[in-house]
Amino acid sequence: IGAELHHSSCQRPGLETQITMGFRTGVVLPASSRATLRAPVGWRFPFVCNFQAEAAALPGGRTFEYFDRSKFGDTDCVVDGRSVHFTFLPEIKGGSMWTYFSIRAYNPTIEVFPRALEDSSWSFSIANYTSGRVNAEPLPSVPLRVFRNVKLQELPFAYSSKAWAMVLTFRTATTVPEGGIWGLIAPRPFEFADPALVCDDDDEDKPSVGSPLFRPPLPQ
Image (cartoon, rainbow, N blue to C red; front, side, top):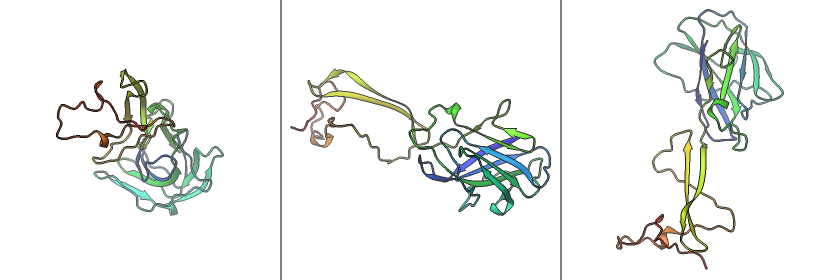
């Protein structure tokens, strides 16, 4: 089958989210078809499965049906919290018709978030059809607001015996909007130089932060 995780209402790690996914089969499936949705490591479903949607984001440009919580029955969340079994009460139309539904889940925390993209695949199966498993198309996860490939390196020079320059490189799984505020927290007893103490717009010759000639003002 064709399937996609279309939308997540919350992209912050560790918080509850509303996952909206859709699928399409080539044939009509009878009423009361049994389905299973399995999340990657870190994601988990509530013990009591919740298909209630507050405001589902749905795609444009395709024909689909949206199933609300009244269209599900006989739900069962597996002990590990990553899998949920449930029944679609209505008939599932085939052909070009997509079927969408929403389910509540919890995003993984930073500590257990899968760092590799290949570890973030979901799987969905209904009747004898499957997606996201062996020999089937994988289901990429919705992106979270986390950093990947974070690296902190010391530059090959020092400002003094107590001050040196570092370079931070990283990738984000989602786009950071213009004007976003960044925060970097260093462990004690490290401290950052305050750029406001050395900024001088009238002195164009003053070495900038990151230059070997720059001398940061450090606390006494």
